Image (cartoon, rainbow, N blue to C red; front, side, top):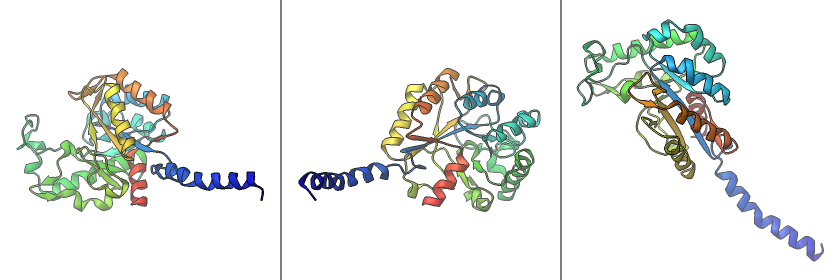
Amino acid sequence: MNLKNTLLLILAVLAVPTINAQEGNRNWNGKKCGVVLTYDDALNIHLDKVIPMLNSYKFKGTFYLIGGSPVVANRIEEWRNASKKGHELGNHSLNHPCDGRLPGRGFVTSETDLSKYSVARAVNEVRVTNALLKAIDGKVERTFAYPCGDLTVNDTLYYNFLKNDFVAARGVESNFLSIKEVDLSNVNAFGQNGSTAAQMIAQVEAAEKAQSFIVFLFHGVGGEHGLNVDLEEHRKLLAYLKKRKKDIWVAPMVEVAKYIKEHK
């Protein structure tokens, strides 16, 4: 081997650790970061504006439906079509019960007060909603989202009785975790209210820097809910994610949760 070839071989060997280090950071389905777009409460705006916008960028979201919502009952075929397009129909309970004893819970009625539920009632209502969702989309794998992020019925973690019914459950606590650190019974999420595209993009970049993933938690997008993000700001976020598609994996919660489970 002549001197030139020897030098080329040495350079190639020295380059391998750098290449491996770069690839080692692609822990999210071969990309640097994972992003999950979730939308709560089964709003008309989700069907009218959000899903068409996601489709235009070829992204799939997760829509956490309240089983008892008239927007579900009156628009079943549209939700079914959304599922056929690859969007996840997640379970957000039958009546969206929240603990009425907590501060800022004036909207909770006696019928939807989780503190007055039994564990059996909470579990049964979630399972009824699963049956409804299966009737809509025909699927058996999906994720759950805790209404108001409330985990317990009188100090009992009611999801413990539902772990075999779901791939994962999304909570409301915000943090950037590695795959091995993720608790699939309470997946972290970043709630959005009045957020600008710049703020949301900064959160994506923070997740990427941490070699983690981010779950966006939206309610209203362009109206229809007190927790709201402007439709154009939402579009700008999608445009950024599309531009970064080589490095950012965007997928529904159920797909990301299954990936995490396989790689923990």
